[in-house]
Image (cartoon, rainbow, N blue to C red; front, top):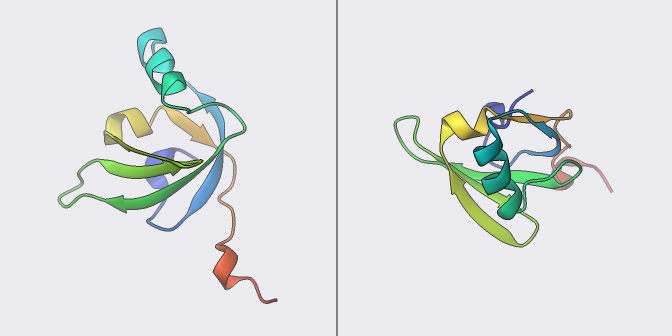
Length: 83
């Protein structure tokens, strides 16, 4: 699964980044690394960029860049898990 497939409110763990080296370095500098949890906060209208939360950092990335980020299965929404 790729990051662009997540819907707002969904979270998942980064498995790998498969892109050219320059993009991998830029994403690493923003905190995108294997094993880190990411959450989609929202998506801009008309298939626009994604607002992503990774740790305590919010980042807006293009959909084509989000397609380079491979994820493990999405995590369940913590509010939907019965206590």
